[in-house]
Image 1: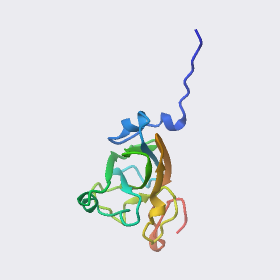
Image 2 (image 1 turned 90 degrees about the horizontal axis):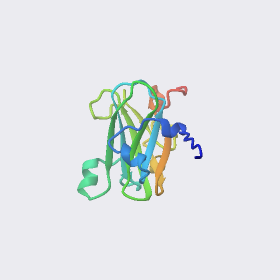
Image 3 (image 1 turned 30 degrees about the vertical axis):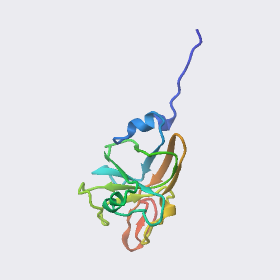
Image 4 (image 1 turned 60 degrees about the vertical axis):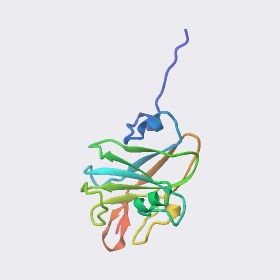
Length: 166
């Protein structure tokens, strides 16, 4: 009988958070985001899925739903240690836009002075409004992996990763 050895990749070994974790585990069309550079381990993480259009990116979810457009949200408690990897199921292959936020105070309202945000491009946001191109992700037939660095308000220079200077 041949010996079979299974080796887990580091990404596969990470616990996946959120209500859609099974979609990633089954290899369904989904996006698995690993967020790095968190300020701390308080509050919750939120991963949101938007249509990949400039008009709809970061639009209020109530308006998107009212217009019959795609919008999904997955919440997960920020783990006390280890990687922060969240999965969100997508309806089919295609192009989407995502936003990850670190809701540090747990109030479900973005607090510019406390909360963090992350986008797939990892472009320093500064004081500008994020562009659609910052959030775009192309999803194939399986799990699309994205690693992003969270950004927090850094004085007058605006939002930036914590490992950069003002």
